[in-house]
Image (cartoon, rainbow, N blue to C red):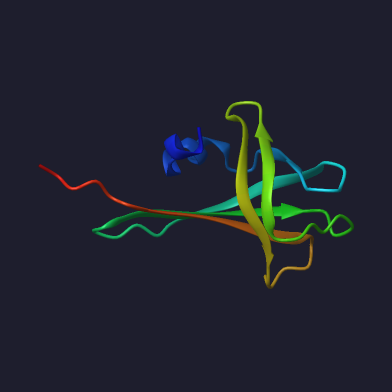
Length: 102
């Protein structure tokens, strides 16, 4: 499932809510607040920035992520330093080599 996800999969989901099921914790609702294209000539790369509640910080790890339109999948996500203080911010980074063109 996750190998089929690309930036276009997430573009219509900006500002949507997702659920994270951190290991050893109750589920945490997070919101997709930013999508950045970081692709190059050789890589298909993008990052997702999520905002979650300040009282439910979860650690960097591979966690189950759920969205009604995408389903459920495991993804590596972790908190990052971010200049805003309205929540805890988390980042997911996708970075894949592009397939050579024939």
